[in-house]
Length: 183
Length: 113
Image (cartoon, rainbow over all chains, first blue to last red; front, side, top):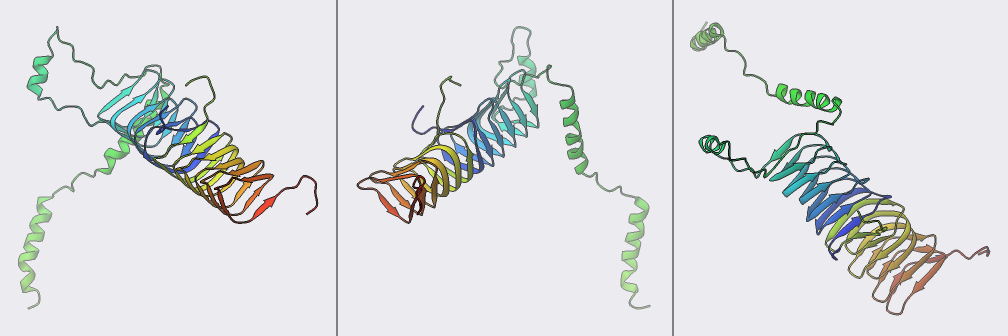
């Protein structure tokens, strides 16, 4: 371990915030945000409840909160993550439990024509950022995740319907408006 | 994780706010503000700066501590260390070159005070 690295040991709870540079291993409990210009590891048995902004993140314990990493996020089989995950590369190992939105910010936007050309039988797309689905995950969890998406979609209201007749009425009224003070 | 028990460390480039409690030995080389309630040995490294009320098993200060300290065992201020606050402990040691500003309240075993 380098001098710059830190450890919050098992059996210790921090209620508050952590920020700075250097690597951090959380084997205990952190209730609050972590902002680190370094690598964060949440060990098995460790838990973080709060938003996490780090250079890279490895989760083996519990994370409740949104995570954003500059380089990569790796969610290992022993992990449970509830929150949105955003990083150039996101890896979720089979067995991990994840509930939230995954955003891979670093994925290059390949034009469709190129992608079609690449999809030859002999060429297999290199797995740069793989999300391995967890078929062993209990079915209750994906189901529980669904209402959240639906809510989000519902929040975007459709534009109000335009009724031609109403508009015409309004227009007529506007035309009439200068006459009204006279009468 | 390795099999051996790792003591907690908060590195020199870390700023931590809040309340820390639990049972473990801990070393702080960074900045901590808030409250520490740890059943174990707490060490403040030469670069460490702690502004907090401390309830610990034992305390060793090589850096700077501002706040009242209550230790079930001993408190030691090493050379270069600085402690500003009232200290309550069973044993207190201030090394040559260490500084303490505040009251001292030692628990004498069974003695009336």
